[in-house]
Length: 153
Image (cartoon, rainbow, N blue to C red; front, top):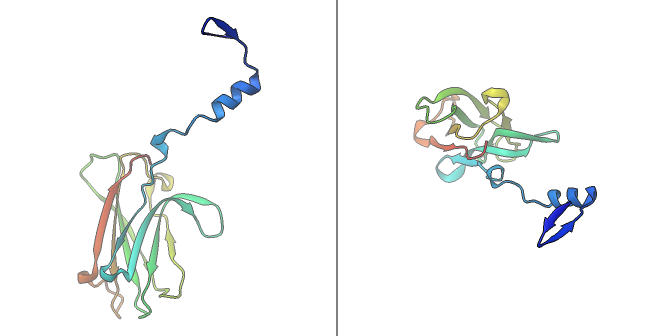
């Protein structure tokens, strides 16, 4: 029973449930923290995916997709760092992964993050992507990096 404008109102359990169900989601959980780093010309791209589709079905929260958009056969390398619970000033290097699938090949999916693969609010993610030469070494002049601090994890 509720009192409103001098009247007593009775709500059924179903009406109460419906009124709660139509409340909008909290904006704190709606921010898309996805971002990308790409080599000059975009031949290599590493993208942090805040929430997306993992190969084989289902969703996975917080992973990296590495794209090789060049058909030269050399590949792309992505490096990742995380900065847990900013404003920690230390970036922790967490690894690297290569995609040599080329222009017609599939993206490489990679989940290098600690804490069960999760990024939390205020955590930083930094990606660096480079093209590889014929010896499999990163060509530093093609490397670019980008970082982002998560809004909602």
